[in-house]
Length: 414
Image 1 (cartoon, rainbow, N blue to C red):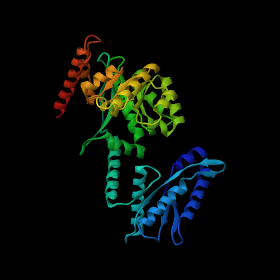
Image 2: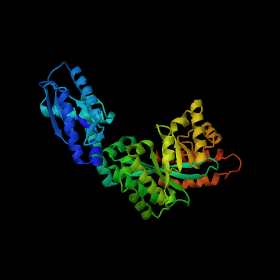
Image 3: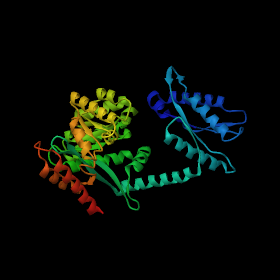
Image 4: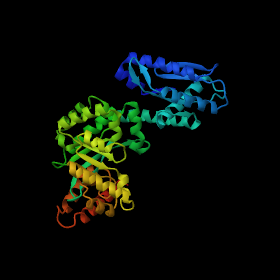
């Protein structure tokens, strides 16, 4: 049994309140167990129960649900109203030794926390293999940082009115010596969980700023910022150091923040974003429309750009609701003086609709796939040679040339 959000209580209210909270948690757990069960604190904010009665797995499920409900109710600790939660991992003892049962319960607990806090999970043999795979991935990730196995790819962002390149989004890739390119969706969560996102994020910032400093004046580079990075109080200084080393003008660095990143710590995020804004960096809200409070965040935070999530763009030609949402977002952005960028643009039909709705920028396979830095000069040359600069039809030649560059790059890489 792991206490969710216990670290937040320790960090914000102090260890004395944290210790008193653990005592209160122990008392509530004591009221949950039956006579003959064994309850223990295993360490820090983890507790364990050996349930000896009842038909399994029903009895364990009922006890886990009872624990989650009991520990999730508010606490009054020294005049502070404290709300935490609990995640529970369960292993059935079918003749294994105590160490094995505890290890299996811990693996199940890890899975319960991965699936979302405030729930329970039973151990299954497949979890053991998954845990070993994750541990191997963590070891490889640490090795990748020391051996510089990462590389940045860049995807162009296009001004829809002129067809010119506005900038590039920097996307990290891992060139694993045995597995080839590993998807960020696989290794970024592990980097977040293990704290490796700090050094990895610094490397991405350094590389992105260094590359962008060689591009034509005014071309921006966008870098994604994770919740752990933004929570680091030194993050603005880390950004400033990357800019200083590269000589890149701060206004050419665009930091992309998702709503989930802001929700982790609104007050801390506000302070960090204001400091970055004062440095001259641009701020973009990524995946706009997928959260619950995006409109409120536009009022609270100093964003320069909104990136409309690709899910709305993909449904643009078939779902009337998606078109209405994009129309509303682009209109709002125009009123606020904010750039609107549509992600995931893949077809000419989507492009025509986005232009008709007044969207400022576009990004997607129609203009170019993520590509290594070495291919960027060819993209600049292609788009520069064909951009009509506002005359005639803005996109026929630009899209075809951009797509041809992407196809050529893909053929050469193959």
